[in-house]
Length: 534
Image 1 (cartoon, helix red, strand yellow):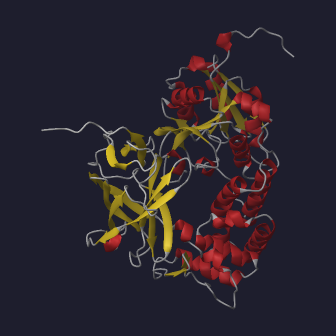
Image 2: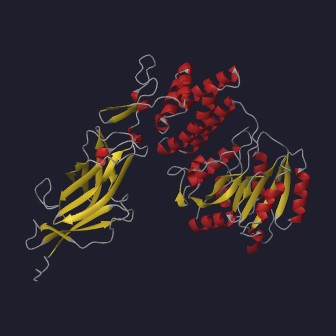
């Protein structure tokens, strides 16, 4: 072991690990994007690994290492089952506080490393995702980059849907967790490493406001659909080894089920490469679904995919092929819904088909119902709080309305409920332009007389809207979604009534908006103000 003294200036901020495999035509462009980083080459090191190239990649790397000798090193490994050996060698040589893994087909935007390092340091993040952009017609994951995030995790965000290793990983976390790219995987070693890093990270940050990594086309070897199903099984086991059963495990499982298993089985059902690959894929998928997948994970999937998976698990491949064809049929009629006992069911093929016997729960879309709502007016008429706005379900009509305004005391949980009056508005529509004419509401909230006959007692009362149409009820917070012209400035207390408990005092209500935008009323007691004489 070396005992050489390490000076502060010897510690680089970032190690950029670049895997090169027959990439002679693009190496220079990749390296140029690294040397142009605003972070500065004195704060980074490049470790390029030739992964068994048979073109001129090795010679190009040798020339680059000579030109950039102060911050670049080159290694070589024999071509293996996957890219794992090249990435692991680079990881073993990394001295930077952070490490990021690129392919030679990738490039970095000029300010990428500076922005990502700043985010990691500022937020004490173990993993930093920089916004991805495709360099061509191939697609890259984008849902996790819609906004920057200082503190997140794989369970409350979409970061787990991006499992390529082009992230900034804190080197000390990688070492502490003993992370490495599995060398026995023909595909997916990058998924395994990144997934384990996400699960082991104390914090994850996202740089979403500007492009950081420009992704080139992948050079993945041709693999069978059955091998892709095997990858799903491997990833599910990896997640199981890291997390106990429950919602967090289900969330990560759902990603592998929808993205990898969903695509592999759809291809096998509709466009199989050959009959043997089809049979291997479908039986392997059936085994995974029967032995490794929980009801909680299936509940997080789109209903068509969940129905397809239920059919595959039961070995009903012909029926699974029918639902897969239904999914991709752009000419199919709209799917109708059934509402019963406050639950909404989608009438997909095989809904309540006695010959197939799938449970109603597979078709239940109640939790997918979306409430569109807005508070548009709030004013006082004496002790009456007058509210106006709209609220409706995107997917349901506005018939059988039973919407109410609910006041809930923040500490005790005590509730007071008030009816709303429907106001017809033929111009009110959902996002698809369908009429929701009876979705507008008005409510007169009498704070001086509740259901008990007494005024609203002292406390902080948060306002909610219990939206109910066709027997389906969902509660939303009033205030965060409001008209731009609505006055949100602090208001003076409004007198409600004489205090029923303390003689000579009165109850007043002061409206305010919480930091999250919710409308609340603080009800308190005070001595009556002196009468004003003109």
